Amino acid sequence: MEKRPRLFIVIPCYNEQEVLPITAPMFREELRRLTEAEKIAEDSRVLFVNDGSRDETWRIIRELSEKDPHFQGLCLSRNRGHQNALLCGLMEAREKCDITISIDCDGQDDIRAMDQMVAEYLSGAEIVYGVRSSRQTDTFFKRFTAQSFYKLLNWMGADTVYNHADYRLVSARVLKEFANFREVNIFLRGMFPLVGFKSTSVYYERNERLAGKSHYPLKKMLALAFDGITSLSVKPIRIITSLGVFISLISFLLILYALIAWMAGRAVAGWASTLIAVALLGGIQLISLGVIGEYVGKIFLETKQRPRYIVSEKTEEMA
Ligand code: UDP
Ligand code: MG
Image 1 (tube, rainbow, N blue to C red):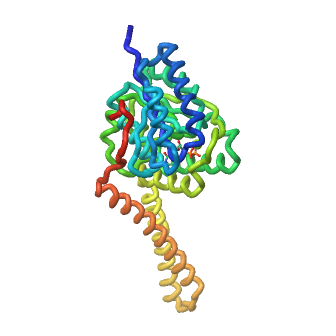
Image 2: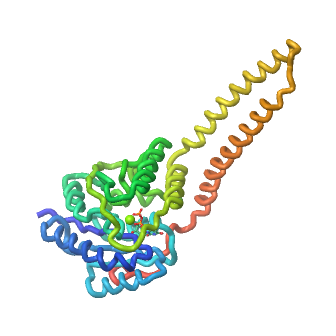
Image 3: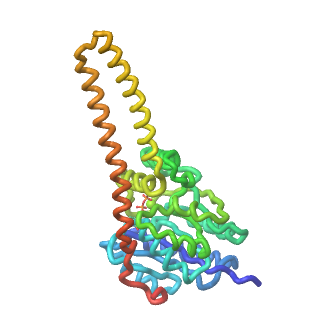
C-alpha cells in the first residue's frame, strides 16, 4: 500500500482564548475522520501558532498538547500579524510533514472542506485553494468591502484567487520551493500562485465566527489590500507614468494654445486656469510621490533582511 501523507493543520491564533476551546476539538475530530478514512497518516498534527497573544491562548495550546500529542504549538516572541504567524507555522511544519492545510482558528471556514482538499491532493494537486462560495453570513458591509478588495487586487495586477483567503492545502514540495521566496513583505495568497505547480479550488460556505471578535476591521483590511498590491505589482507606478504622459500631452497643447494666443495679441490674465493647473498638478504630484515612496519604503524594509518571525517557545514534538 502507498504511504499515507502526514498532514499538519496550521492555525495562527491571536487572542483567541474564547474560541480555541471550541474549535480545537473540531480540528482534532477532522484529523480523526481523515485518519479513519485512511486518507492521512496516524501521526498527523494540529499545529497552533500563537501570535504573541496577550490572553490565555498559549496556556490553552500547551495544555491541549500535554493531554493529546496530536496538538502541537509554536509561540512567537511577539505579535507579528496573521501572515507572518502563518508563514512561521508553514515553515516549521514543512520538514515534518507531506501536506499542510492552513486555516483560521475561529471556525468560520468549513473544517469539513478538508476532506475534499485532501482528496484533490491524493489525485495530484499540489495546492488546493479553499474558496468561499457565498458570504451569506457576513454583514453586507464586510461582504462589500471584502469583494471590492479582491477586485481591486486583481485589477492592480496582484494575481489572486477570487474569494480565497488563507484556507488552503499546500504540499511540502511546494513549501520547499516557497522557502526561497525571502521577502519580508508577505502576502501569502498572492504568492502561492507564483510558485506554480498543479493547483485547484474547493468551494465551501463561510460561517459566522464561533466566538471572540474579528481582528480585521476596515483599517486593517485596507492596509492588507495596499500591502498586497504594493508587494505583488508595480501597476500603481505604471498608472502614474501613464497619467504623467497624459497630463504632459494636455500641457503641451495648452502651451501651444497660449503661444498662439500671445502671438495673436489677445493673451488675457487668466488666473483661474493658472490656479487650476497648479492645484491639479500639485495634488497629482503629491499622490505620485506617496505611491513611489511606498515602494521605496518596501525596498528599505527588504534590504534590512530582518527575520520574519522569532519563535520563543515550542511544544515538545516541535522542538
Ligand atoms: N490572527 C493572527 N495575528 C493577528 C491577527 C489575527 O494570528 O495579528 C489570526 C486570528 O487568530 C485568526 C486569523 O488570524 O485565526 C484570522 O483573523 P480574524 O478571524 O480575526 O479575521 P477575519 O476572519 O475577521 O477576517
Ligand atoms: Mg475570522
